[in-house]
Image (cartoon, rainbow, N blue to C red; front, side):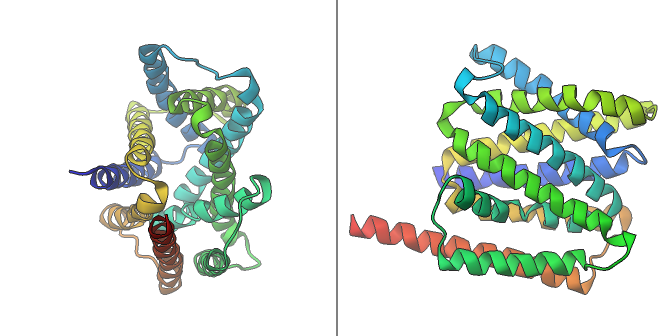
Length: 290
């Protein structure tokens, strides 16, 4: 198996793991989203803790990177809470699809903050994805649209967090970034969680621990996948998460996305495929010219 095939395999493992995580979050029942987020990050923090011990590395990163690590953790925490809220109040595949808009927000934030150049095909892709997102959200002047807007917010916060991760790049080890984020999440949400805390049954505790385990598997599989192959070559396979989420939603809750949502899926995934093909051709031209 070559490196690209390994990268694709880990991305698919990550997609399945995040879909299963979403199912466990939904299965845990009527628990505040912030409480679910706490337990999800607690498991990730423990896993990252032992990885840092094993590699004998820093828990909180370098001094010069503190403000970037802080904002990555802050935005990531908001993103997880919003995503879990959307999972609880929407069709599972709809909430997953809205969250998958985060790469488009990464593009926008990278242009604004990292001064990266944007091409015309990316602008068309952003516009297409935006229309696709509207079809899933179905804007209206009623409270029923709130979960979809919060789901969109999860993608915006995640996009900001991933933009900072891109900036940190080789400046920090990935397990240090995960530990900092998870630890910050636990400490910052603990007071709010205690304010709205609902006692958990043993079954709910086991479900939330399982959600945290699959979230950790998904996070590390994603990181390993991008070590084997460039994101431009394998990121597109992350959208298989939507298929996994749709299958799980149908099997467990008999959820079926409506026709507008399905059209929105096609537009968002289609724009990603076009961007993927464009990037591949751009890389091929550069290699040919060199």
